[in-house]
Image 1 (tube, rainbow, N blue to C red):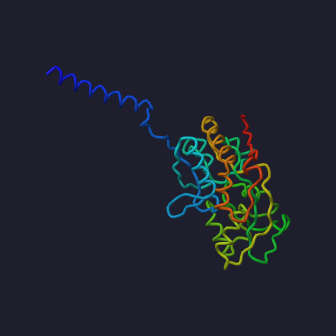
Image 2: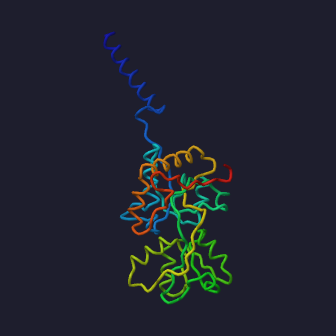
Image 3: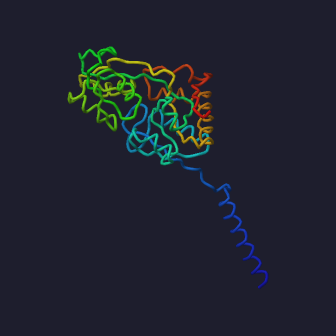
Length: 272
């Protein structure tokens, strides 16, 4: 009887020890899942395909997460509330081709950059909106809270119409209720490529200098910021950034800073 009781006690003790190790982060512990706010309608950067969030930004983030030992759960949202959602903890990361402007650094911290780009005005063919001066007095659509919103707001005499997403603006442009739809150039070109029968073209285009696209995190989450930058640096060095970029940007060359051996695109946050 004593032998039997001893065996039962040993089994129960071993089971309790196993549970204790798991609770303390032993080998059976699962990777942390982080909530990522993103958009669903802005290819090739961020979009939804067959129920899966994808695009250059999101596939790169998946790679970084794998390297750094965490998992990601993508959640669709409107851009206008994305940075506030990151700042207040609704999202752990913002992934949405977010230009790392000085104004936005007051709200969130940014990883180092993973892309550079241009702002362009999509117009009806023959509209001749090829210069900044030509935009004056025109009805310009933008995604609310975007860099393009800031750009259009500085155009003298322009009537700025704000939308929650890219699809809504393209629909209004096609209907003729907008003179121009101000978007990142890659998004505008992608729309034209996918809709060759629609009589639209790219008009005035300007480079977004010194504000590379970056992932947004809470200013308090310095550990996550370090992981994003570490994973991104490794992805640049081994050519993963170049490979993923090439999958989504067929005709646009990758910045030399992001090619293997390149120095990257450092972003200095306000509290750095």
